[in-house]
Image (cartoon, rainbow, N blue to C red; front, side, top):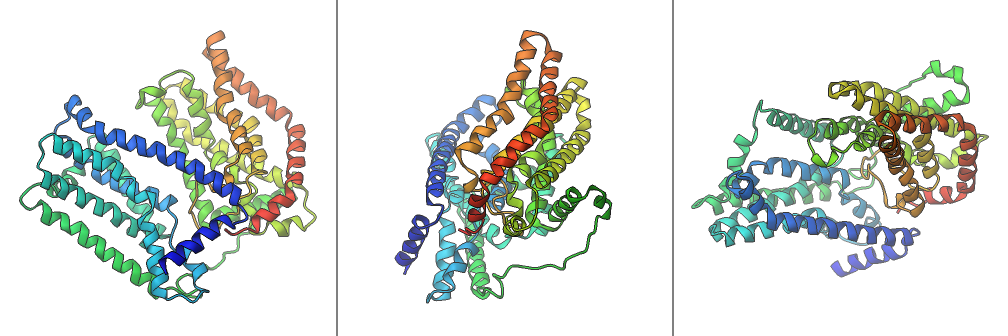
Length: 493
């Protein structure tokens, strides 16, 4: 039966309408996985000696001290990216398989996820180094088993917490606050958590304590199996959840005609749906990205040209997270829209104004960067001008080639999707990020820093001046890609 499940999975991959895109994306993912594997291996073999050289203390104790943040970070990444078993269960419900077989297969697939075994590329080399440095082998093995059991616990915790934002985000928020408190020396949570991880190593009771995560893992496996076995009905636990709709008129937008109608639809979409709310949260987090540059936390970002790079991201969080998926946000009713007497120009104008409003708000909210000096905040203002005058067009242009239907009820794949990966969108990324840096560097090194900022700002102003001409070009592209987009939105796999 297991062989039959794998055969079905293999056929679904090769028979999919987007097979070529899937294959290219899988190859890209393999290269990405190889990069992380090499990075984890390097850290696994080198962390011990780096910690020793820096004089931070016992390397094992140092790793245990910050293990709580590692585990929570792993859980956060899983929650955002890991594919859930429900996607595998639904298609199999129509076939003559036992429920227990389907659930075991679906949960078993998650065990072999890259999110689980990638940690081994750090902890196995690190454990080997510990043994070669005269640490007790039994204690090291006990510690290693306990930690790996916790990572697999994260796998099943993620399954149980899927779409439970009310539980997940407050937990991550609390840990983020604790991290800030520790960084500023106000409160150190690791004083209480480090002994737990140290107990897996300390003999003679280390092997006994390491059994606790193993028993917890067993309990989570049984709980996950029981949950999916009990709720494995299309009209029950696997059904799409519906909530009561609330009427929101936004009549003050009626004065703008059709543009106001589109804006009202976009505002309602953002407020009512899970995926769009997550995108807004991510765009707000972009505002704090500039702290890596302004505070000098990372030496690699101390070059003068990096200030404009920070300005682009700080002011353009909504542009990059929301704008790049236009018109995919409307994929569920896009065919209906295209059957109506709707002008593409009005539709694109509404998206552009929404991006502009969000960019202005982000720029105002980031005014606290004045603490790092007026020049740094000037970079953010200049980045906002460039985003409005250039990048706003580029994301709308690129959206014509990103034919990714979006499930508004789920925040999975909030950072992208396999169909968003193509050569055209990658080429359009170059002027978004590299062009303003090149323009700024030219003015900075040839004349003076102010000239660099003026050059980037003028690029944005020129883009705004030629808005009508640029929009006519983008409108033609959308019309050309219209039927390909409609066909892509019909694909659910």
